[in-house]
Image 1: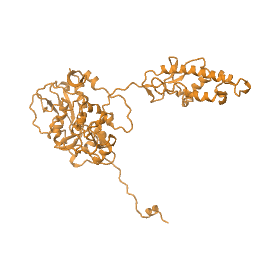
Image 2: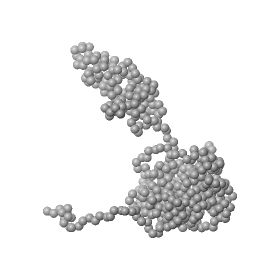
Image 3: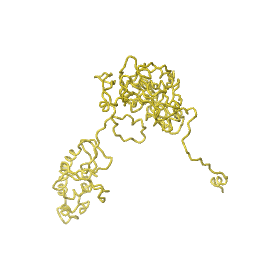
Image 4: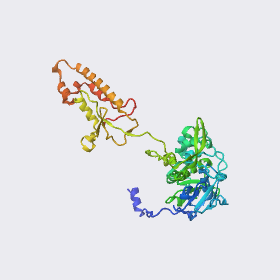
Length: 505
């Protein structure tokens, strides 16, 4: 009787192997004008400060829009205008006191240095970072709206936030840029980590679902799209943005990449009508602001900045002078160390500057407070409980002991165990003293229950109590109730005041 396997082997056919991949896929011919070199940069200077030592460089942007250094005019001017407090009327010139350049929005900038002027403001203020940037509601830059769809679709029923991911993947039919359907993520346009900024600027007014509340306001269909995982990572690493060029939405790379820029820079995309152009502008600003930080940190006599203020219940802005040292402290703080959870997208890690409580290693209590019974079998039993089993036979793992307020504390706590209580041992010591008193009362009660006739004993109580150890008492003589309850009531299992578990070993 023949089988499927024998029939297959009798066919004479064999599998065909593909050749080894020797290089990444070649980009399509139409993107061959992408330079992608880290040497192709353009400086945009602030005319209100001296040129010496480069102290007036407002922004430095990569110029990837041509075979050599070239940058889309409207995109560059928009970046400068956002940093210059939404100065949409600003313009570019080639030299101080020069004439305004007569450039169309889609023309290319090819010089190495430009000055960004704002009419009637020589030393115009700048926003120091994205957090202080005020979104220009009802005042979007005119060029930004040139590629915006005229109508937005409205679903019959808005999905629950937990269902947004599947809905947006179905809506986009794959990655927004590549149309791949494998390894595609939901990607927030205004980053999810910036939900605080989102709420302060009332960005929910541009949502489709007006009933989202709290931190869920950022999970609207107007603020999400679908991206392949590598492009999602590049998106959240501020390597690419989505901007209008020639009345089309395109992918624009603002940082150097090995292959992605060569493959997808200036690739046109078709945005779903639900996606908000306001959220896209917020993403663009979020990606651009880190490039402006050097303007504040470069040695200088001071910069005029505009920051958010809160006066009682009113939010506003004020302009003030800031030194490089002050800017370093206020706007260049490194993010607090935070272990990334498995499955978290990179966007959840961006701009995470929240301060976290100082972490302390948890110390182990290796002996109870000294008492008259510290040499008895109970203390020996406690000592065995406090010493980790895997360290009893390995000297290099033996605990490092330090006496603190009468407690022997092991500083060689296991890795990763932390608490935020500055001193959890005060309550623990008190609890142990109380437990010892209670334990002595129970011992006294147990002794009273012993048979009055010594001939009925099967164990030697006196030998056990003078240091022979608990092994010389059987369960019957020790008292079943006593042995079961006593270990459960050992102190140190939980700190009552802080409710933090404390390991005995």
